[in-house]
Length: 157
Image 1 (spheres, rainbow, N blue to C red):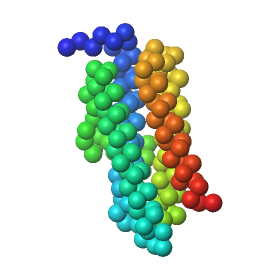
Image 2: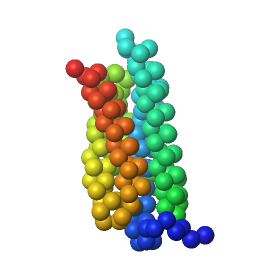
Image 3: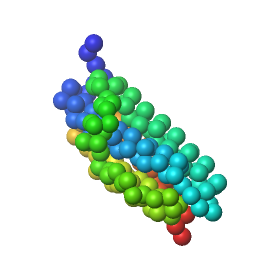
């Protein structure tokens, strides 16, 4: 069925592709946060174990929202690990360790990377593609990442 939402198909395609990259970033971040939750050790285990659990649930929820936004634009969301790894800006790290401060630094770096990516596409959605809905949507995600980055950064002081 044709998607008739007042945005031309060529614009929806570009926006959906950018959102696919964001989806990959959110999925990879969710996995990396889950790894931190599972493998954390140290005297701050109890408090950070719960904090990391909250963060990976938020990341998984954001990934779901991004995938649904792609569908609202009339496109299919990527849904394979291979595709996510091809699209993401983030890198996997097998040597993340179990130390809370190292894990926090790694997660902070990923949130900041996503913040920079979203800032780069935000205006484009509105100005170049006339997609105020997606612009508003990613603005909300940007604020969520900024808050999480602040919380992670606060652990490092």
